[in-house]
Image (cartoon, rainbow, N blue to C red; front, side, top):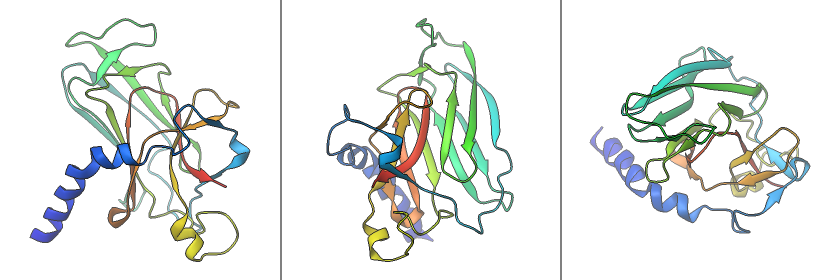
Length: 200
């Protein structure tokens, strides 16, 4: 039990460095059409989610956390805010302590790890970003989509990609893949669509 706790602590301590190291090697300014990406699919035995559309009220000055679980109790998504994460509303006005905003998380496509976060344009403090975690343990093990489950899937580089508006190209963001926990984590500075994908 102690060794598990120490392992988790090591992961948390290493996360900032891992996020920086996992930036898109071609640069954050590069945008990729959706047809050039392979989006992680859910596996054939993946349970239904308890909800595909959830909302909660976030308060400036208070920590917040929301989860989307499978019906069997396994965690799919976890989204966290620190007390100072909320920075600006979509219209640019700054949050003050006690201000609230309703945050909505929607599953865009039930066959993929593809999520929409609203309100679009909400901004978080770069020094206290929001954190997004998704457990990909229920993903189809053919990560690269070539029709075979083999060593190429182990080497397939996937992470979080963002899309500002439907139909627009995607941009890779810094993310950390935690193999032992089958999680992919990212620190978010704003709201849009996010999906787990990799280059074809």
